[in-house]
Image (cartoon, rainbow, N blue to C red):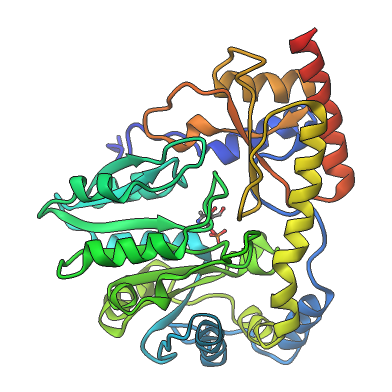
Length: 385
Ligand SMILES: Cc1ncc(COP(=O)(O)O)c(C=O)c1O
């Protein structure tokens, strides 16, 4: 019999809720994926590069043209230059990049700081490689990082801090002051930073998105993770990248070559061309802001309390004033009896705390959001009448 390496881990909550959505024919606002078509231009580019015969293995770190475009895009936005030859690797989505960074960096007994609520892969992967997650709670309602608290949790065993901005599931976006505070905290230490920036183009506040690559004291010790699934609303393509200084990338690639070796060739060429389309990139934030505003309006009109997300394509909605159900029970009831699937906020914590908060994905057509809102309104009416 196999001895489980992750004995306390089941199927991811995203699969669980999506399966439940299918079973009960619910509107699926649980897993984070758009329900609208991707760019026609991207599809024709993909056809073009396949037809032209780019169908064999790509170079292990990625097609050079794509790595050059990634480097140019980072330089244009954050004024930091990554060498495409030695500092950028194309990955099978953000997920593989995150896994590879942790696998390459975390040694037995290392402590890794994870802010909760957190994307579900961080903690289990740290544990898989013998690390000890040190969980620090983001305090509601604003889910901000208390940097004094972080300082108190640092020790000689701290190996890595995992950041995620814009943040899934809370929609918060780190400010310049947060990254300055982090830079100060890690200065003179050997602590590395894993910066999950897969939602970098999905920000709605005035300050925009700040990447760790903008801060020399952070860039020199950070792995920055991006996702083309998020940038091009094509989550099924499972393509992303990791940008990091050469000495970190060298170790990253030692594992990358054995985990996946290389990523889909024709689509790397297609994405390289799309990254040259600055108009497309500059319109992403507005496109998703309209969706956020639309969903927030629908939910507020029902009478529910809501703090609009500053980034990502997720919106938290707090139900605790109208029901005492814990978020997992609430999410199940809402899916099975009312036909709207979401993800309970509790699923983003290692210890599943009680809360009446659900996460909804608003990367959907207006018709989908309208239908979900009608059903949530029915739930609200039943709970308050
Ligand atoms: C915070 C965060 N990181 C990483 C990922 C994974 O990205 P990808 O779909 O490119 O693997 C996701 C996907 O939902 C995410 O929300």
